[in-house]
Image (cartoon, rainbow, N blue to C red; front, side, top):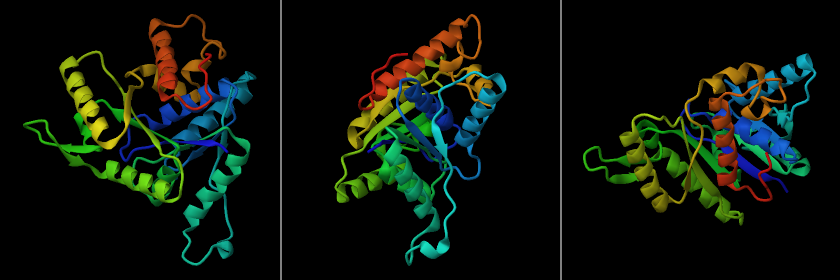
Length: 269
């Protein structure tokens, strides 16, 4: 059965879709079969990313590794059991299909609280939560006293993850691995960076997640999206000499994949 990776939090702009696309592409490049689903039914950033990638492949003739992206299927409402939610049935159906043919299924969640997001979190073998490196995003995980810096208690998203863990335990599933990824790390504001890092480290021991660094703030991520490219594709896509910034960004992808430590994955790119 496929290992399910869920990328989510309840705040937009944290780099969920960029993180999702780089993880999915890295896994395919390493020889794994990867299915992908985007649960942001309005914005569809991951879906658009894959669509742009397929257009680039058609127009350039360059073969690039691509996840097996699936949209939620249409269903006959008549097949639903009494009280069954149509969207829930659609998610169950697409994940079941991908389970049979994939090594990994990656689900990108919207930056809001939805029924589909709740379901996806309960399915997660590995939950990856990208977070901008600031106390604005930290507040999604826990409430903090502004004067003492003391953590007062878990916030809305942490409570949702806790509920998902309880559902998994009640269903006899293995425990979820939760990883918080610090994105948009800047080279400046070192004092704030250290304070956020300490707060995350303290909180991780209380509510059970691992912390790792993700992607720095780089213009290249915004430039890659229209063509559907990732940092791992630059040489294949005909980019000549890579800048030092691009080389450093590629290393961030390697480091992230190494830190996530997905089962059966050996980093070879």
